[in-house]
Length: 333
Image 1: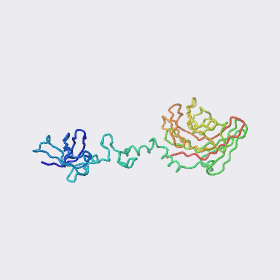
Image 2 (image 1 turned 30 degrees about the horizontal axis):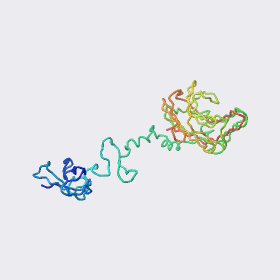
Image 3 (image 1 turned 180 degrees about the vertical axis):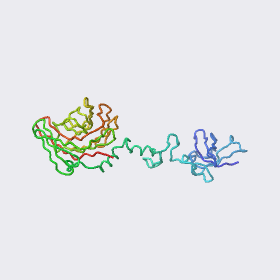
Image 4 (image 1 turned 135 degrees about the vertical axis):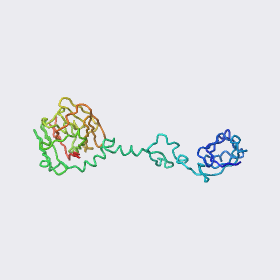
């Protein structure tokens, strides 16, 4: 008897083949002799073959002819009947649950991509890419700017030769002047406090140098607990950032001890804008600079209530240190 099949493998040394019988996904014949009058270069996986099976005994089968045809052998037309039968797709479904197919980088085959559930979870709240999408919501919150002093109870804090210029709806200039240890700061002095780290409320500071390197300065952008003295120090109860001589640190303190991490980012005139974000969940605080996670703190976390915003600069030498403070966004939803 003669039987149609699809070539699944060929050993040119032994001149033997593996064949899938037409009409069956499970019926395979292995180690079948191939007629020597068939050139080895014709024995290409996926081609149709004819098997001679004397008296229907598979042990005596032999490949006697081969011609072009699609891989598979699952039906009369010889086409693929499952995804895995195709020659340009993955060979197994093992470990690929929930994933989707995509064209590979070489643009010549399909492969499995990231699971759809994993993909969207990364961009949801508290996913590893949470801040980028969360910032879209932050831009919808209220701006604290030229009307801050009336809407949000903002006030000036100035010592020594410090000065403050409320330039516009999106910019305040803070200058220390040339007298050593002078301060220029703005802060929320009245109104309702916020609880950022316990309520998963992101805070975004947008700051910029004012045309010169910060060579002798200390800048603090804090969510500062009500009752802490002005100007705040390293161990004042706070979460936020400090910038020492242009180097940005993530910082928080419980009134006794500070936890601080050098973010490795410098505020220099050539790259002066810093988008600083903080997010907390009560047991840890995450610190981002320019949307990149730079530190996660779990120690010396202050209490979780009644915070006000402090944004200020002081000099540590007799030189004018200058800063532009664009805005603060607090997500309150």
